[in-house]
Image (tube, rainbow, N blue to C red; front, side, top):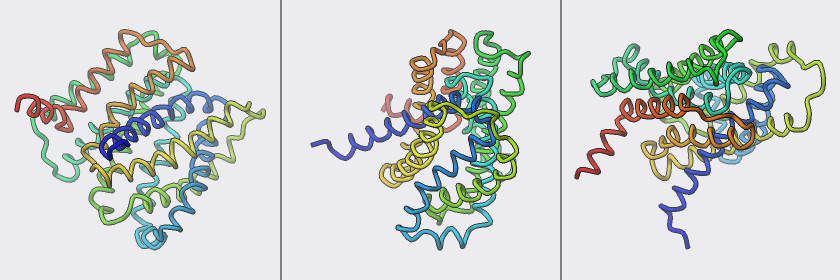
Length: 298
């Protein structure tokens, strides 16, 4: 028999592998459907998974009571950043996208400091500098991004998405602490699916996408959005957010592996160095690195 701790760690790895694959599926489907239609189908597919579960667990009342804040979270955590990442996927590899996504803790901390008066330690500030230096290394990798062919705008789109994620995380932690993750996720998906209708209907593809693109959409909606979010909130309930946030370190590693295996994306010295700097910065900014050092030395 597998004990509970081992089972939780296996589930954490599985969830990270699933979320890491989302950037692979974006790379496959975005050129076929375009950013708006792709994300419209992604959130609609996820709603089909999440809404019945939300009803079964009696969370619709929570959703209705907090719909205004959840609407804002939907804008900042799904509708807009999902589209920005889908656009960036037209120009960037899946591994690079996931490393950009790992900058979310930097923006979360900066927004908490600038808007909500949250204190930042000198180590956190240094960690941000280290992390963003990793982004600079990635941006100037000639084998990863063609800055002259839309690459610079793609980088800006990805970082803007991470900024919005940081806004959403601050909003959730201050306004929705008493609301279940199931209600927040389901409501966000519902609002996003409605908000994207006028944009997606104006960007229909000229020809029918192939079967691999449709499979990528299904995987994004069912696996990477519906199932992964359910696993995420269940793990938070079991092992706490401090351990669950370890996905920030694992997702880029899985994404680099999936991109290399299935899309033959190259892993360059710039990629490895940039990834290490970003993850090191995340460890400093979130305090995980200092906590690990203390545990090793104690």
